[in-house]
Picture (tube, rainbow, N blue to C red):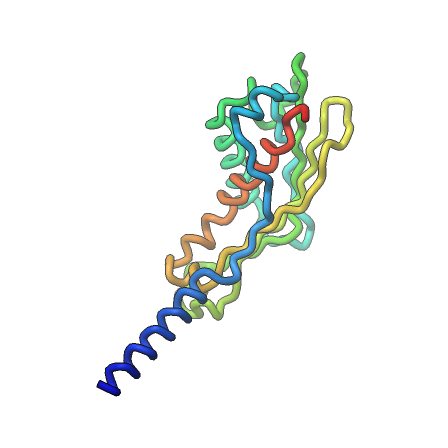
Length: 186
């Protein structure tokens, strides 16, 4: 009976450590969550135009993640059905109030599948940091903020690197939430 209690205690401790490791250390910028219905009633901008999507010179191979982030943000905002137009900048002018989105990637690291396979959590953490500027049609800065995303390295190991490779898409969702939080007239 005494050995059984020791096994139970060890099992409990291992379970607690496993849960802690799987849920700890994921980083994401907190963005105010707002009701879509409430935003719809006080909507200040009819169009969202994604203008500049750039990266710092020291960011390696940003093209794919930048495109994926922008595409997921556009799709996310279109699904909300709040705006007349959500699109990449084509140079056309808009009659309705328009909000322009400028994004600059300041940090990007996506751990490869091979590194995650061989190194597991020891391969490190993926991250993506973006500076976002929302600018109105008159050129006035509405808001500027750095958004950060970094999935848990242990969770990335258990998901076979899927959380690493979905980071640009998740950053697009975060960017979409950030935009929605700042388009109302309140």
